[in-house]
Image 1 (cartoon, rainbow, N blue to C red):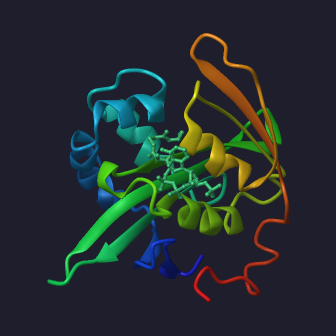
Image 2 (image 1 turned 60 degrees about the vertical axis):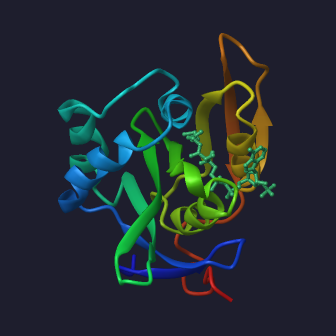
Length: 186
Ligand SMILES: CC(C)(COP(=O)(O)OP(=O)(O)OC[C@H]1O[C@@H](n2cnc3c(N)ncnc32)[C@H](O)[C@@H]1OP(=O)(O)O)[C@@H](O)C(=O)NCCC(=O)NCCS
């Protein structure tokens, strides 16, 4: 993907989507510490107070841009600082190459302003080649997450079971084929 994709959020804020880099490892660890306990829980479906080295290996070092794509949405503040607002990733299932999991985290102060929607729009354009559906699990009753996933295509949402809901989304368009024609800012 281009290194920098301009986007406009639902609330009108202009930002950029960029690939997560290995150099972002420490920033990711720090930013995670500022998330609320609820956001952390909804991201990992468990109480994960901090990102361990093993988790960071997976979340940063294993991003290969092919089967595991991770993107950051950031805004530039008045003083020129880059402020990351959200992170989205898609990971192909090795045993089911036409399917992938997605995970999104948005910083608490920016929930409900369109960060996840903008991030996923770009992420889907850069999803692993051949991925046709998303298979994932969300916290039961995570309405924002369910709404976000329903935007991606034809979604089947399972009944709540043991605190989670399984979601399968049949994606609407081919990966990368529409890249030239689609631009998130219009
Ligand atoms: C889920 C999450 C990523 C959504 O991010 P966001 O930037 O707030 O989402 P958006 O503003 O783009 O909204 C996405 C959809 O959710 C809806 N939504 C947002 N907040 C909502 C809420 N509190 N209740 C119900 N719906 C909500 C929006 O209306 C939108 O739906 P629409 O397109 O049909 O209008 C964010 O809440 C988050 O980081 N949660 C914690 C981690 C998590 O749950 N990740 C998902 C599983 S990995």
